[in-house]
Image (cartoon, rainbow, N blue to C red; front, top):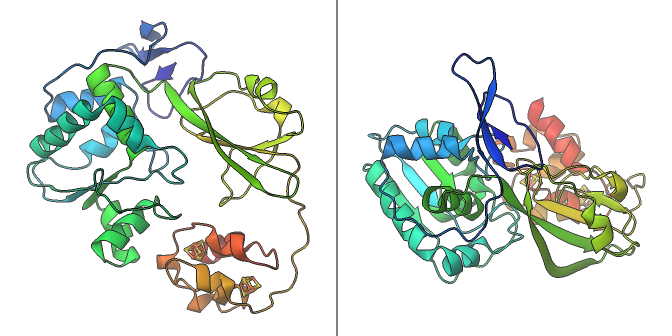
Length: 335
Ligand code: SF4
Ligand code: SF4
């Protein structure tokens, strides 16, 4: 269940959309029951206003930027302004093949959506990478600032500023998937894919693709029955982020706004005291934006180019001394 109210979301295993009444004294449920994934395609003519209304009704959120309702995102771009729209082929960690899913199940809807965007934002320049052949994903290609910078050949700092000042709009394939579901199949954002990844006791990742399409608020207890009892620890963060471990028996409920990956560990990598930096320079070598994380470790934070750091976590993953570079660079960025 999703509440269309400011800063309030209700998690429930029951599907539906709930709004405050006009007097803001009661909640009213507009729809209830289960949505199937087999609703028929509806060719609908939208304009700017009806599209914003669909985003609001469907409780759509950007799945590329955190905590960003799509009705607010689209309405922050004025329909008469000139800006650039990037339709990108990758979600943040690209765990699931949303482009293939869209191509297989929603090709007609995607075509309609691309045409609708051009009509409701007539002055926008659309860069459509959804059908571009020859691209192959490597992290951090799914981080919006990085993707746009790479394909527009502009500096990350400029791109970050243009994203914030709404000169650039970014829509990744998971966000587009849910827009299409709402606008052309009338299925609100009440379900999301959860990708499950297994890591054995030696830290080896099982790369078989496993995912579930789950209701918001659904209990995650079924995970315990579906996976080998060896996997006792779970985390909703990817390998590139700081891991907050959970006992697999206390996963709680699925939150579509926060969860899209679940890593199950046989045992968590040993959290050891970091060894001293051995000046191997791997962090700088692997940094995709040349931000110089090594400077932070060496106490020369002024040489760290914080405007270029996209917090991709690659430097931390490659450090042979196990130094938590991520935490140090976040601190340096705040300083
Ligand atoms: S400094 Fe580290 S987190 Fe920042 S962009 Fe470079 S590799 Fe990524
Ligand atoms: S990767 Fe780790 S050990 Fe190597 S230079 Fe960077 S901080 Fe030092």
